[in-house]
Image 1: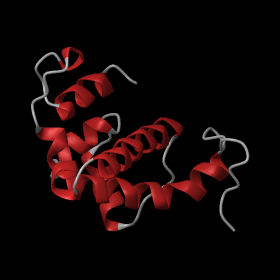
Image 2 (image 1 turned 45 degrees about the horizontal axis):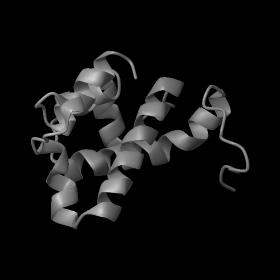
Image 3 (image 1 turned 120 degrees about the vertical axis):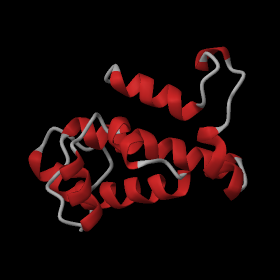
Image 4 (image 1 turned 180 degrees about the vertical axis):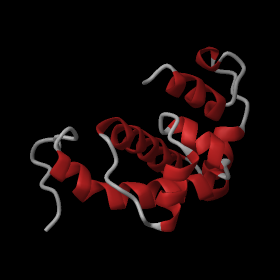
Length: 122
């Protein structure tokens, strides 16, 4: 019934987009809630989607996500999963807002870095 993953799904295929979008949107909303990020931050992470489109997603009235949006949700889901494997639930949830001494982040929080990177179109 689901998507077979012997090979990676072709996210450019409209049928695959339609099939994966409902689960991707649920995952995105869960991540946004868990990390306590604003709707504006969430919209920027997903590539600058409009207020209207984001609110449709939250109401469950979503159209299929585009390839870029599915890719971005997939990346966020991977980060979310890794944080929850590595850290306790409270630390995993707050990690994106904690300042990090890693030179890659240039003194920003991981969330600030992700938003800055998202603006450059991952």
